[in-house]
Image 1: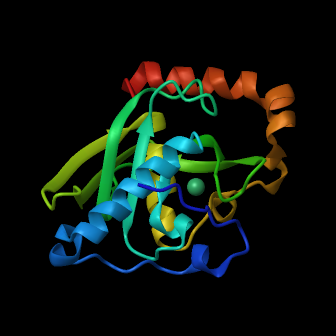
Image 2 (image 1 turned 90 degrees about the vertical axis):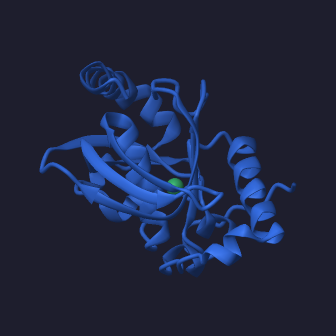
Length: 191
Ligand code: NI
């Protein structure tokens, strides 16, 4: 396994639509090693998720894991989930204001409205189907990661650019109010 370099906002790889992965490709030793690298890189950088495009591989794969994350201490735990060829369907018109960060937009955060309930269909890393409903704060994490595979970053989803902030000023001026909103969501949805 290896820790990969993470692409930074402005690099064109972050702006392209990643391509679907075939079952044969997914089963190959090389591709399985790539998924190991993606997970290891996410963990090394304390990411809540990481998309393949962020490590310069334009394929439709992303990893999500939240486990006592120092970058996002209010996020509910999510066991390691690898999504291959994910498709998200929004199941509600309701949105919540998610204060997001991204390893490809280092040092900054901003508010992206996210659906409170989604359905995600995908393959797991072994090619088995995933079909689940995800709600609350965790639904925001899934939407952020799958956006990467369509060349979108959270800054594209920001409705109010004035919410854009450094991490330091987020902690000073915005974190307390956001954590209250986040806790209410987690209390309501359990995730
Ligand atoms: Ni990101």
